[in-house]
Image (cartoon, rainbow, N blue to C red):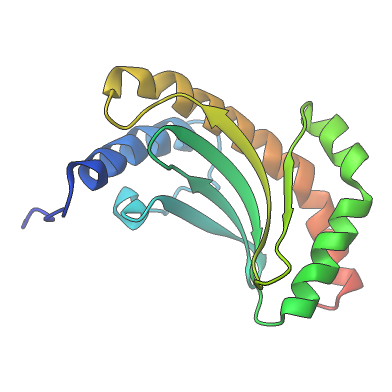
Length: 160
């Protein structure tokens, strides 16, 4: 088998980070079970929610980790309507999640996101990765549990 060539050490480290993350994730949920760490080459691993253009995402910049509900359908107006529907339920969503979330309604872009940021786990220091991976996986399990009922309502409300 031919080894993938990475352009930078950061990309190589990110793939290694995602290997550990997916191993931990797959022991708790099957949400990312069929995702390859290689697909995280450019910092994200995504899985469809079952609604086209709406994904659960692990995002790994260099010195932090994020989990997201990413809304990026073809129609920017529809994205904003879906986001606004979720925003109307922000207090309940954050109460169930157990923490505040970052809400990003991008006016000049079709992409909107709801995110939880976890600090630490710098890609240059592999010994810091396990703690961040555990936080991200536990967060994603809760994220999916919190958002799944709203996604079912969105599917009906917007006829998706």
